[in-house]
Amino acid sequence: MTKPSRKLAPSWITVALASVLLSGCTVDIGTDEQFVDSGPRLVFDEYEVLFTNPVCRTYAYDEAVVSVSGEVLEQKPQHAFCYPSDSDASGARPESPQHKLIEWIADPSTEEIFFASMSFSNGAVQAALCDAVAERNVKVRFVLDSATSLDRANKLLACEPASGDPADAPELQLRGHEGNISLHHNKLFLLNPGAETMRIAFGSGNISSGLVLHHENWHFITLPASTHFAQAHLCLMDGVLDHGHSKSEYSGFIRECKESIPAREEGDAKALFVPGEGGRGANYIINAIRQADGIDILAHRFTHSTFVEQFRRRLTGEAPPAVRLVVDDDMYWAGRGEVVGGNEPFEYDHVTTLTDVGMEARYVETNHPAHLLHHNKVMVFDMPSGRNDTVFCGADNFSKSAFKNNYENFYYISIPEVVERYRQQYEHLYGDLATVAEDMPAENVIPSEG
Image 1 (cartoon, rainbow, N blue to C red):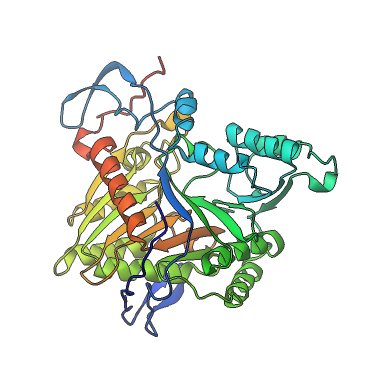
Image 2: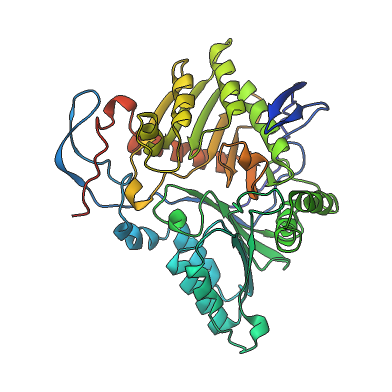
């Protein structure tokens, strides 16, 4: 995708006066007019949206399996269900997020790297980072959740810089689980932060199988550091490194740091950070639910009762939109009394509440014993004529904690090319990979690796 060559007239989205109960606090929706798409267009040199779309072998069942509707099933849906042994082939493709990230890390122009993730277990990325430190003296700083395994992180910390100076060695800080903050759940890479030109990668995945075998989405942007979008991410970096020990300290710093950015916030690419900006992000989502002609959802968790209620109201009101949902089959099995992953039975109840009033839902049959997931967190809004279609994406799950208690980075983007990429990906997931409830296996059977 190349930089837009012309400016488009802004499309105003006025938020109606209302309030909802969100995460235990009242959030005003539009006490003043809010213009989601107001502001300049994002200026960038390169903007690429990539999806993991793993390439996996065919895994046939080892025993007779029938679907809920009684049809004989011979195999799991190919490329939905994978084993870790599929990782190398998937990650080596040029269109893989892992391949793109390693390419950026290995670029001779990369001199400094900051990254933030809940977990860090990707060996290929760790090796690329270590090579950058050992061969080019690239400075690496990173932040992980304080409860995660540090096995891979310790290997990176052991990499010796080319200079031999311990001050140039990689540095790790742990965040989360203190100061009323739950998880450190940011998912972000900044390359050459503060240089005249920066590179930013963000998405739904951790630095794990989240770059390869989970079903994920990633953005790779090269842009001037002078833009509000780039400066906001420097605020996140400084905030989590230096002001990350309590919710109030972090949210206060983010607010003051963003207010001091000279550039005006872009109208077509808004970066929002939690703690502090979850209410604003929820406002955007709720307003879009109320107005959209069509809504496509990709979810990992589906616990946010306020969003569920907003969907229910639209679906049971006048002129309901077309609403589709794709989730991991962990949620399906939880609803049938078999908890096989992180999803809980009441999430399936949320799904059926909405399918009962017109939503369509499908399930990605992933390998839950191998902890592989459909891990996207996306809403694609087809807005009425005269308003910009929009994508909500990023690290945030659709849970109340994600909008209030975790460290999170999420985005509200109306760049037409980005929206179109998500539309195409949605049709692939919904039409090619995901399974309707009546075609799901009657029993939870996992084929062997073979």
